[in-house]
Amino acid sequence: MNKPYVYITRLLPEEIVKPYREHLNIGMWQEEEKPVSKEKLEEESQRADGLLTMLTDPMDEDLLKKTDRLKIIANMAVGYDNIDVDTASKFEIKVTNTPDVLTDTTADLTFGLLMAVARRMVEANQYIKDDRWGPWSPLLLAGTDVHHKTIGIFGMGRIGEAVARRARGFDMDILYHNRSRKKETEHELGAEYVEFEELLEKSDYVVCMAPLTDETHHIFDRDAFKKMKKEAIFINASRGATMNEEDLYKALEAGEIAGTGLDVFEQEPIRKNHPLLELNQVVCLPHIGSATVETRHKMMRLCLDNLVKYFEGDKPLTSVN
Ligand code: DGY
Image (cartoon, rainbow, N blue to C red):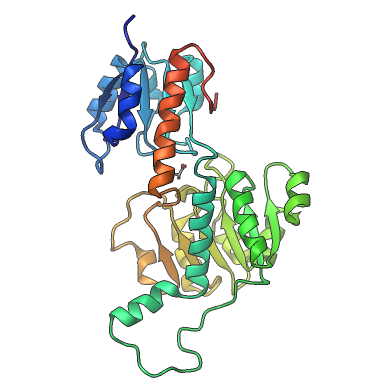
């Protein structure tokens, strides 16, 4: 029997892909750092039985309606806002993502980012690199405490919960806001459910872990930042478009909040002339939440497992539609 043809939109290590060649006829974009071109993505979407996509590949209605062979899109991310899932469902195209395997890795990075902003680690590192380290002084690079403060987690999914677990280890008070209340999580982690506004008003650290949807788009706007404490630090490790970046800049500049740590941006990549980079109280990372070799390998394998399962007539492991 002919093997199903699957196109992978980025160059993945052959050691990962090789075992799957037994089940799948695999084509692959030959660049690791550059996304597949628009033309190639369109061509392969029409030719392939399955696609393994990255979050940089816009699988929109226009593209999906030109497909007629395509049966499954395995997206190598837990987020899938790059895919028009409603249209995919309409054309009976399965969509899968990569939850669980990246939960702890992303939570580690998120908490690390929070610590980096609070304790001014990036500034401190630059201080030495600039050869500015003089005698010890009482308030040199003094930051703000993390332990025993209040963290407010917006989006208590798997990664939100894993961030809360880390916060617990730092004796923090944990507030959360989520689409629905999670009594078990409250019980297990000692977290308290609050309305969005209360979360903004009471938290020392406001951490956005919610997926990007119509409801969360720009939810962190000037109004939201104004409601936060002046000492508050805003962390975003989910999707950039949950915040209005211009509003965030204005809030920081006006001293309405104290700092921010961002792993995601509205338009990625940002360039060095991005206004937020002018400010000291900002730590920016290039969307590396799940970027450890172990986790990225697990994400790749999960995508490939989903494709194999589907073409063998089984249910994929992690479907979103
Ligand atoms: C995800 O999986 O959605 C992350 O943002 C990618 O690292």
